[in-house]
Amino acid sequence: MISIPGPDNLNPLHLAVVYCNGNIPGWDCVKILDVEMFPVAAPDIARQAEQSKVFSRQPQLEDSPPLLEFDNLAPDWINWQTWSKKVELTDFEKRSKVHCNSYVQSVGKALNGAGIALVNGSMLEEELSSGALVRIGEPSLRPGSAYYLCKKQGGGLSLNALALFQFLTT
Image (tube, rainbow, N blue to C red; front, top):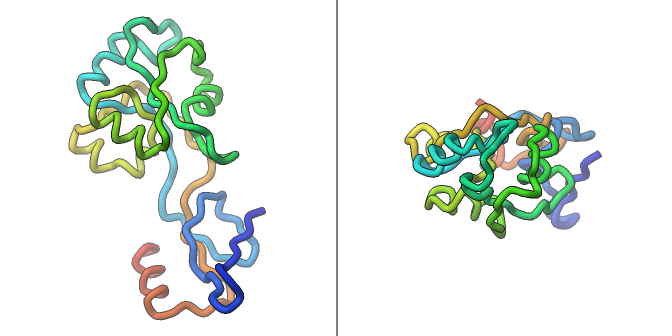
């Protein structure tokens, strides 16, 4: 169960974006962004990854680019370590990795050709459609949770909050 408290009793929270399954008691939740996690890299690095068969059953690990890994900061956060277990990626511990401070830093490093990032494709549609980042292979993970815009049941929204809710949900 997820609890969404307001900052204080005088200024209660009536609208929030939450990564969840869409079921929060006392809140109406509308999905605004799906989640599908898959590997991406700059075009040259993606070619190198494909040639080394980095996500196959018999990867050539000595020739594969590094994975851009970040710490797992929450129980439902998906980094390479979590993803590799769920998609049954072999030899994860033997793979070359570059530590990043955050998901955002891993994407930036991937754009600069430093390795392979694990991304939510829904968040990077522009980079993928422009070719700045290229999806590598077929493995992906849909965790079941998504990003929801949540509105407190029975709570009145200001005109600006209502306009934002309508804009994001239509």
